[in-house]
Image (tube, rainbow, N blue to C red):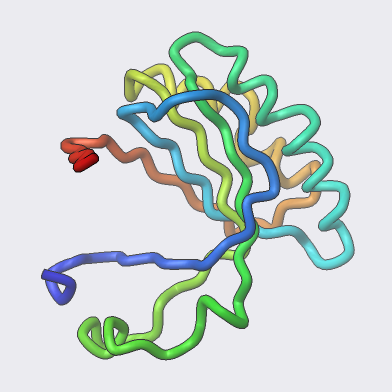
Length: 140
């Protein structure tokens, strides 16, 4: 199945902050990184202001910041060989999860548009996507 995946992104991350409870059916994923020398500023803004504000919003059940470890994320694997190319490794990943696409998308845009990210130290190459959970199996 893996060769059929498109725009596959994988990273081994350290969870810097995780807020909320449960699992939302919709996930906003913002791939970003700090401008060199502004890591502390961006991290403090995301963890002290943005992510806490997100979980206070309607229909948002969680907000998280993960920072990639490139030394582990870029270790060659047999799985990468199946895809035929090196994985793209985001530097940081900010996540907002909730119950509805509109709420998650609006929540993220309300508190952290592209201009706001740049003003607080994010590099201009940030990108975002919205994903829906279609199925989950818990085999306890």
